[in-house]
Image 1: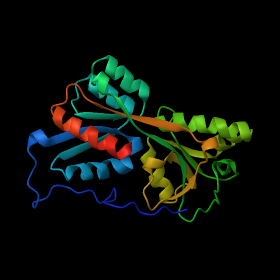
Image 2 (image 1 turned 60 degrees about the vertical axis):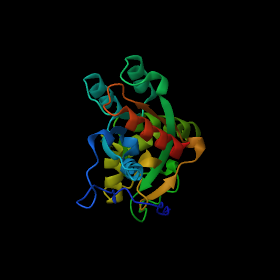
Image 3 (image 1 turned 135 degrees about the vertical axis):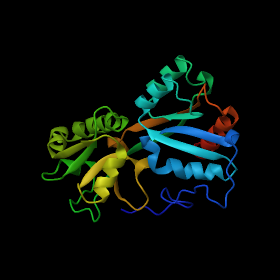
Image 4 (image 1 turned 120 degrees about the horizontal axis):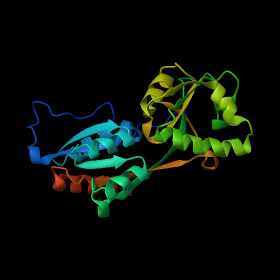
Length: 243
């Protein structure tokens, strides 16, 4: 199925400062660490926030690595994390403001399929059909941890599913975006990703709640951030849009 384009600027149409837009003063620059699970939409959201006069710098990465970067002295203003354990440990270590950690949203699994859906995928259980070329996230990533939880549910209803999908897996990717990119180029038949990672023009097959699993996203101001006022404004903006 195709999803309609969301209103507003698409992820590829991110508004950048140009000669017609005066450079924002340094105090209004807000640097945000975001997880791969938000890659498709983070810059669009940042551009919407920037309408108020701020300039948001978005750095996409893997939550565990960003946690290490904070410990080593990185100073973004806001951190959005895809693993509750990482942001909890960061709060305990004083790297983020503990009493201002909030759940931002939850994202769920979806199957992205190649253009025209050549493998005829109609549900997640079809990933086990012989000959289907499947892409999955690497074992260390949040996407795999959530996928594994979903697969456990499918396995309970369809014994042998996990082994069959494992046999069909042609690659384990180090991020959700590579899965989306390769599948939408037709280099594989299907991949399991977060719904928040899929561009509006990609073809997807929904995963029913019975076979789905969620990933909670958390947001917090970084203790060492240089723009606490900007961080507070960005967090207020994000939580208002995701409540």
